[in-house]
Length: 82
Length: 338
Image (cartoon, rainbow over all chains, first blue to last red; front, side, top):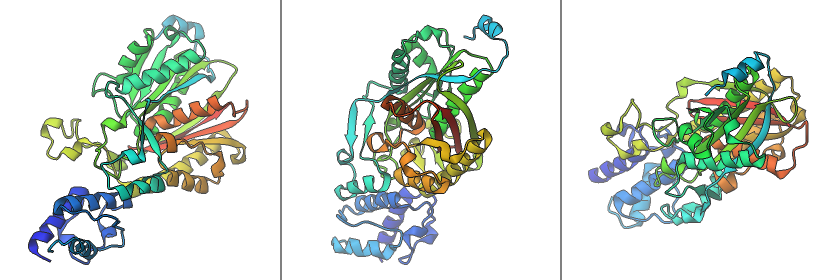
């Protein structure tokens, strides 16, 4: 993962989850392990990622069992160089 | 004002708190889930699935919390032709007040012409309606007042972040009202149990706008909006909600099987269903209107109670439990015998 991608994803996650600690961040991070995660905030995270990377993840729906790596996969699917 | 002459005449005898009338006020504007176009289209179906809400009412830009409160209060008084000048006190429960000060109840008093009533607000967030009802009941029972108008009014559409999917789709605007009076006949508020746990004060909050974080020190705009920790709220609501119903029934000596109706805070359908399971009262006894109004915070139980009364279904002697839970954390339940 590019350093810039990492910073942008951390920014997106932090914008939704106040108690997110960037030291937690890794491709293996399970979204459900982010403090205050719930499925409604999962939609907020999806919108934050879409806004940060100027893409539409269309029918994607982030779940607590998804990992950061799954977000990267979705971004690649939209032609984003990650 | 307190009519001391009346108080002296009434002495200090304990009086029964009777429900003389109810009312509700709901803005005309209906906002359906499909109208929430700020969210991705594929997520709109999730709103009803996750919350049970299909539509909600939003106040007109010209209306604030006291205006919606006045709709409910006027409907309540007009239903029985009650002169507003005979109201001794107004308690307004709101967590979305017109402004930080003065009390929103003061403008409500002026709007409905209840010039002889002393007025104040309480803020127990979503428990506000039950807290205000319990407070009014104690004021009547202690013979401090002959009539108390309880109103719970919320305009959450002004305090929600329109871009926040975790809160915005849940809520709606509205108000409910109950007129309580001393008397020997009619529906009675039999008892109530109120509880608070300040250790959870951060679970549901609007961080900015008070003395902790004044607006002029605001760093991030989202701090000006309502927020809640969804999972913690769910766990708290179903645990404390079911426990407080048990406490209420025990303290009033009411058999669980005798409960005809439960009016829960209209938080979301999953909370209500879980509450039904945990307190062992079948879901069909629960009054639910959140599909049409969303979560109207402190007003929800009084709106639903007004709808129940207006349905003509309750029979004299029916036991009705009101139960609410919300920011604070605060929770409570009240028993009404129709």
